[in-house]
Length: 208
Image (cartoon, rainbow, N blue to C red):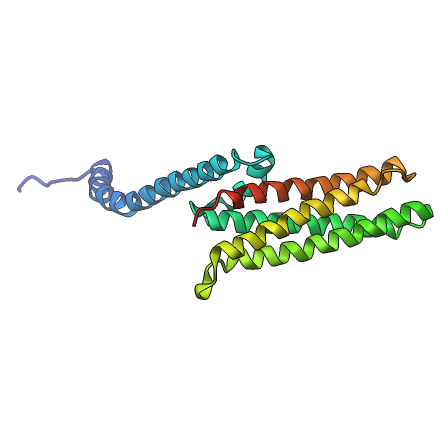
């Protein structure tokens, strides 16, 4: 009788692994390259945002508010400005909510009510100006429109936002307002004003 050739289970496993390894590499290597490339691009975009924010009045606030949009902004300065304006608009709406709730507080004195009411009007103006700014920035140069004229309009609106916010807090001067009311209004207003200042700095850096 001829000698029988027996293959051990270990040998079979080794052969199967040897056969499958190249196939697995072919499957997973492209995904690994894609993951690495995506990670590299993401870091590049965040670096772009950080560099741009370093030119603003409040760099840390700028980066904190815009870094999450880095993958959408990429390296597009117009998109960065659009998101900066959108973030400011969101902050202005939040400030409006805070101040409006304060106005409904039955514990306010007549003088406090007057200050808060004026502040609400100023914030409403800010929101309108920011909405116009976001819309104009999103459509910059569309249909052959004058880009420089649009930018000048946006700068005027954003500057007005900063003035409106300052007017709101200046309303406390000479009026007896509780510390709690002042703090609540000032915190929400100051945040929106600083974001507006940063947005204006970024817009000033736009070159067309």
